[in-house]
Image (cartoon, rainbow, N blue to C red):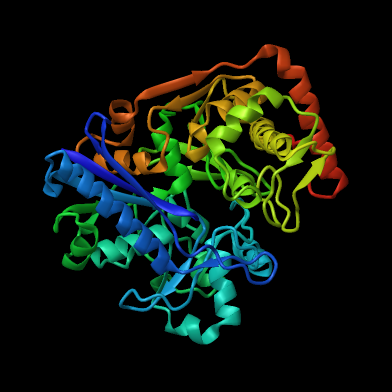
Length: 486
């Protein structure tokens, strides 16, 4: 019995097929051919067909590798898909996209986010321009003909589920959080229609992640080589899938997913309230809360600055240079979401690098400093400080990066044997089709990998570097020098 997880991010798609004990039987990756289109400052769009093409290629290759082992595709019991949070796509009644998707990191909808905040009842977590609901209002204002023709506004994972099954009317409440889904009731709140005038008929029906949706149809079976009739279950955001893959299952445990961006998420019996909206709360399918947020720092800076690099070789060479004499805030483009929200924040370097390698090493440190700042913010809002950080994503594969993160955070960094969001999606696929729920599936399928211990002698030096980073961000008007207290 096997379970397939498909992760579609900004730069590529990855497919993992695992058995019920979490052993990976096959895996494959494919880059997305169409990079996000950069239009005016702060805008980002992508052709959804490029998601499907990359996802199909990764699924075909994974199925072929499974077949090479003598496993027939019909032994895959269920499939789940994860993708970016806050990305929104208008479609017609047949599922055809009406425009390019407006991406999760698109910052155009600032005025519309203000409208959402004015319309929402007191106590609603604040909206910002990265939220899909604000982007839908932007489309209504600036592309009214397209808005009228749109049968639904869906998320990236919903589009992929639609291509697999022909069902275009369903979303999970993980992806729907940034479209305004009430995380306490898991329904569309009344203010979306009553105050904003957005009919919920233009939004998908909400189900829990892992809920069975429909079977793989004939066209998708031909395109992916998945057996026709294989069950597709509701997915989740990529950050949440990375959290699932990490093994952080109990209240008080925290995960950082490090890919194109940096996502922090933990398990809590209660939500973590942030009046500024930097931290938001996903709902665990079994009732827990998953507080966290996403920074625009991460692997994207390296991909832009060193696009053809051998990162494994650079990591090894950079290890001897750390701690560096530099402080880097590694934003690849304008705008930040966590640990502060500022639409015009830009990356910077304090100090003069002596080489590209030193700059690269300082950027590894810089992402770790931002990660530490995020956990300081969470602690200031009432969340417990982590005693260890679980980690997933492409960046989690780097032992050198894990070491500098442990040194900055001063807690152990724990990497599972398969640190991929696609593995989290495979676990989700098993959660309702093989196990009693997501928690049991995680306990059975996550394998322990590397544990990286902090070097205590570096604590003071990295604390000083974090203080310099925060002071410079404050001087530039991006963020306060201190986290907001409870």
